[in-house]
Length: 107
Image 1 (tube, rainbow, N blue to C red):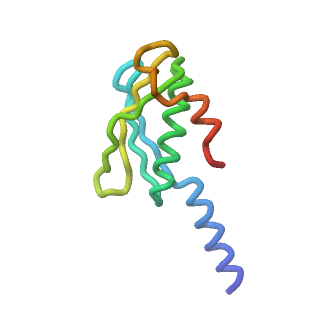
Image 2: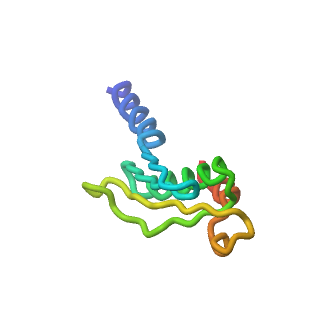
């Protein structure tokens, strides 16, 4: 009984850390739509912010904004459009700094 309980807890733990999925749809050089699904709401926000920051840096930008968030079909996920900017551009003022967002992510 203890072994099966341990295995169930281990499986749940693995799922919680790896069950969030994100689908990316490029819309323009500095626009990407992210649709993220996860078992818990806190995972959704964390996973979405992390991926938005990663994409911003990978695409050569420094800052990003998230357009209004919406619930995906079935209410199991959220979607946003990530708009990316270079430092010094007007859109970067008040936007998330990608490097800071990645440094502040939870383990």
